[in-house]
Image (tube, rainbow, N blue to C red):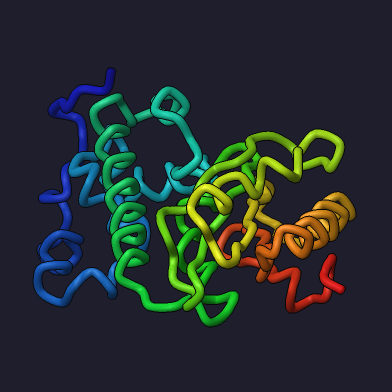
Length: 235
């Protein structure tokens, strides 16, 4: 457990015009770096490092914001200067951002493009540590019927993923169409041959069930690929 001590550097040890909290209040959060925003949550550094320097080291050791999003509290506590309380505060802040994005998706109108669909799930899916397959169910006006549903967790493989299971929620909720989405924990959204094979099978099954498969999105960190736009798996 990291405790504040006389040897720890506080944000108040910085010059007033360099203090992240004061700068945020004066000019807004947009002008602050990731390290400065994280330092506001940390509030205190450690011996030899102020809060901003500690925040930058956390970002470096965990691989940026994506790494922090994926790391567990126990993983974060392995970093010198970061205890359970501060790790929990950081994870709570990230979860608030994720929930904000989810609430905003509830207020969206029809999903008229791959970018619209990706915006609903990007923030949450890019932080997953394992591959997951989600389904977005749409009505006849391309509006979301409910929150995206997780159908499968683990490496996607046509021999393991039951195509019929993908359509069960759509049938139960009388969806007119659906969008598949899965993440690549590596951060690279380039579709694999297995992704293409699964897409082709799902599209064919959708035609038989009269439920159109509008797209299959592959989510990476800060990026996505629309397999429909690439013509992968869609005849």
